[in-house]
Image (tube, rainbow, N blue to C red; front, side, top):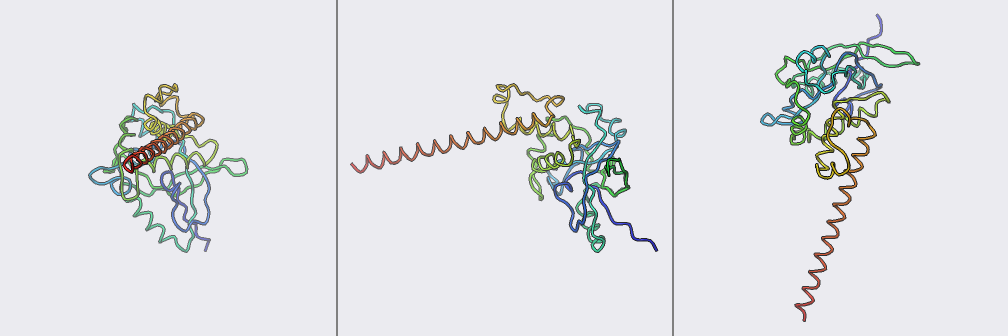
Length: 257
């Protein structure tokens, strides 16, 4: 009898920054002919039944093209993620855990996952949870601004929807030099832009253009602007508090006289 094939699951969403338990090995990999999009409602993790958030799902490029002619990134067709090998002793436990975690519209499938080994491209068939466009939680394509607004305001049992976006975007960037995702980065720019405010952003020459503001260098600049603005707000608040205490001390002194 041959050795049992290890259970390997490919994560392209929250599994990248929140891995499953009992992982004994992990390696970056990518899918060809797919897109990752915030096209799935989240009623149980990053939203509620009354106010569902948005999470990513994996969609075959041809299926996405058929009903999403408004996608600003029509040439995307590679999705980076992480392949996790599970300790065989806990395979059944992890399967049950993932089935429950991905219960809101996701189906387990086997897909070709690519990687690079010794300088050569290698393909391995691995397990992956996919949200098909006929599942009840599939929402399809939404304009970046409207999608961003939904993500900013949604909160669920697993936390704020915008934290999901930020952690996923940051995690994808760390996978490999080639691990670019225009859709994720455009939403991140939208989020940063909303924090800066239009007056501050326009004064520095930044306008929300999903076709051009998705490069890592520009996102780094925008993040630095957000950090500087936050530091400035804290400095002003400290100065204001100091002034209030000074006025209070003067008032007390006047009463004493």
